[in-house]
Image 1 (cartoon, rainbow, N blue to C red):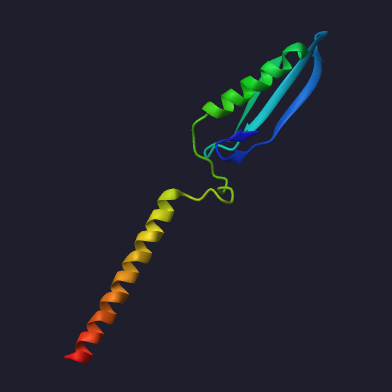
Image 2: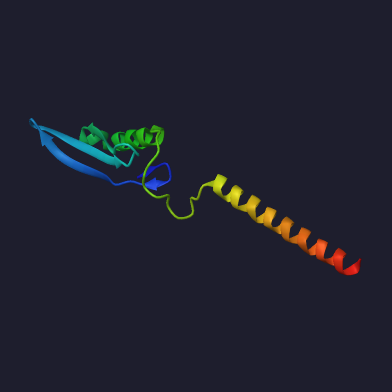
Length: 106
């Protein structure tokens, strides 16, 4: 299942508790300070609803993770900073070349 841009492990367990059949969905979420496990339990005839609830809960969880970001999900701010640095270096190089040409011509 998905939490933010991460693929998190989710399991389904069919079990009996006190003579009652149950379906349990569990997902482990790698929050920065402490990982949590989200459990959703339902009767077998409501298993699809339980899975939908788990998906909804995972979608609403907020927090940072200490897991590395998956490939292709780099920080957009980081890309902006890299582009700004590249442009600044380009401007400096053009400035140096322009100054050298003026010195040779003059």
